[in-house]
Image 1 (tube, rainbow, N blue to C red):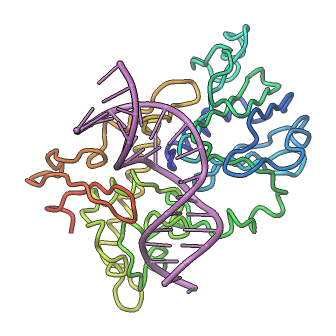
Image 2: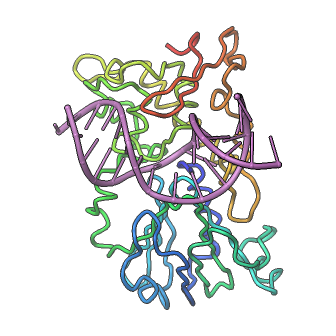
Length: 299
DNA sequence: CGATCGTCCTGCATGC
DNA sequence: TGCATGCAGGACGATC
């Protein structure tokens, strides 16, 4: 699913429809996502105003006027679509000048949650595989919530740097691929962007994570390059509106574009894109998941 | 404690 | 065409 760039793209799409708007009606059509919905989910949301819509790791966080935070995760296949009513032109214009939004549609298969907002927008959460999640957490408890407590640094924040990553990776025997997928090491990376970042940094996904840290916990030049690669790949992907494979679309229905810029992901057998490299992209399986890399230039 | 593995669920592509 | 199999952007809980 949605990794950090896709979740951030969704956040940017939802924000104009949610921020400053009130939940007028909340419909839960299917209460059994990854976890059951909280008791009185509807009652706690209706009437509440969204103060801000934030993202942390792959979670969307809506700060509510009631003191609750609505925490949402898209799982593997979750998406939102923003619909505006018969007054589509007006409402759409009010949401984002020039942006296209869905006209109000019939309910589709796997539409599990519908938020009707005072902005005039209907926000429909669709999730075929039902790995998604919605919870309400009192704001004061958010930082210590089990889902948030262990989450690592935001990779695009200045606080995520080589020194910070060195601390997390020091002594780790796990392959770099697995270490970067670990949300406590760095937040928001998933299978695609780990593959892409490792290729950009010319690092093998099979290399032991601890080998990027020199004695005394000092980051090696390779680790510095990895941090730069992670930031660059994520920033470029957000700029492109994320990647659209099977499920992910932007909230206005348009496709993200970053999949056209994959250098390794799902490119098994293709020539390596690294300047001057004669390698061919290979697919291997690590901890049960596909890894794509170039065995020639990734060391 | 840390590191793997299986599992949740549905849809789609592939191959026989 | 029909069916079986495997695979998919995530992450938790069990297990070693």
